[in-house]
Image (cartoon, rainbow, N blue to C red):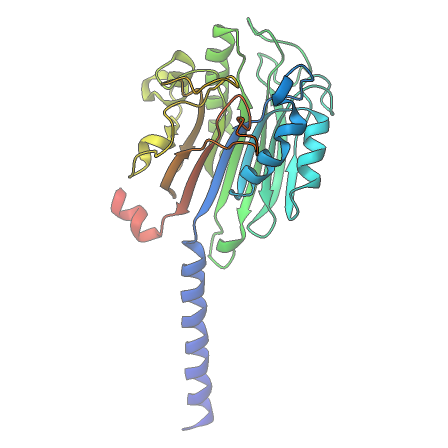
Length: 305
C-alpha cells in the first residue's frame, strides 16, 4: 500500500475515533444536588452541626454540582476542607464577604471548569449589601457560576451551564414573589448560550405565587424555567416533601426545587433523598434533592423541535 494512502487511512481512523470519543463523553450524565444544610446553631441539641456534618459531606459526594443554603463561614470551611477535588464559591449575605449565611455553590474539578461567578442580593437593588428587601425578615442572596463541561470540550461549541443557587425569605410573601420575578429576569439577561440550572430553598411550593413567577409562561415576557421533577420520565422514589424540621417529614411540603431552562439538558432521574446520621437523626431540617442530567445530542434536540 502506498505510504500516502496508508497515512490517509490512519488519519481517517484517528478522526473517527476522536469523533466517537467526543460523542461518548458528551453524553456522560452528571448529578446536581440542592441541600439546605441548616446553619450552625448551638441550640440545636442532638442536631448540632458537629453531629451532622459528616452526613452532609457524604451526601455532597453523590453529586457533581451542588448548591447549599444556610451555610455560615465555619460550615463553608468544613465543607471545603472535606471535599477534595472540588471548588467552592460563596459570599456572606450580611457583609458581602464571610458574614452571615451563604448560598454556596460547588463543582467537581474533573468535570467542570468555572468561567465566571458572582453574587447578587434579592432586592430592588441587587448590589445593596446586607439589607432585607420588600417584606423580607433577612437579607437574601443568589450566587451563580458559569461552567464549561470538560466532557464536551472536543465539541465545536463546548456545553456551558449557568448554575444559580438561592434561598428565598421564610417570612415575606412579597419578598418571595418578587425574588421569583427577579431570578427570571436575571436569567433572561445573563443566560447567553448556556443552559440553566436554578436551585435552592425557595420556601414555597410548586403551585405558589413565587414559583409561578418562575415557571408560568404567562407570568413574564421572558422564557420560563421548568420544574425538573416534571421533566423526569420516572417517578421520584423518595419522600414527597423536603421539610422535616428535625422531627418528621411533613407530607406534601416540597419547598426546595431544581428548575431548568434550555433545550440541551434532559432529566434522567429525580430523587428526594433522606440522609441520616450514624445515630439515625436527619442530616438537616430539610431533605436534599438529587437530579441526574445529561446533554442531548443535536439529533435529539432537532427531534424535539
